[in-house]
Length: 287
Image (tube, rainbow, N blue to C red):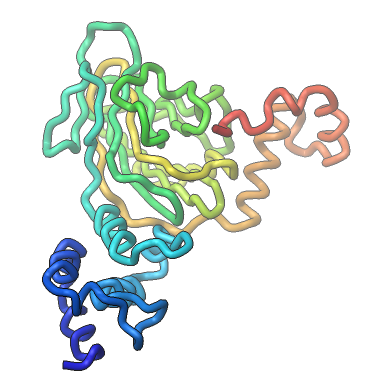
């Protein structure tokens, strides 16, 4: 059989683990193929073609770094396809409903975290959190290391949380459109755009606004932080990202609010007010 025929046959395998097994069967499948781009093996070329057929959003999740394995990128997309669930959690948090529900009872008097295991490093990602029981909780993203032992993840640089009182954390920041979500059954949708570095928030299906306009970068994982109560996570279709105009408006609103100025303040007034102050607040979310 020609290489083209073997690549066509290999392309019928849609699981990266099956392509890896194929690559291990004999030297013909592990050798580099002259007719393939970059002198790839037949399974690697099949994985490259599979990714080529993914949506623009899905390809945006896994930008290739150097000569990174196409099989590895295929596996990464497969993980990001999975229904969202918590996989890491502090010992005081109980996971149920196949990991979709996190519950923390009274006891240690601390906020504790649970997080999804799948890492997001680029592109656009969305999730929905539901308040099942309790009031004080945080929904958002964390770095994918140390989650089970983390206490008060909402104060750690590099993380980004919506608090059910409405504010953004770390730092207890106001943002245009913010609302609380303290009712049982309230749903908070979140869109993380790692190309923009932004996080937008919806409540019960209604867009509230851009909670953070820039500064976020991967790797990140979806997470919840609970003091006492239960919260559910689930997958949600990714809505459109904020426009450049919406991002600029969110930045302007947050800057004027932070500086204690009227929303009608000019850029010159903002510059004057920020002298000696702006550096104390700039990008507190940076890792």
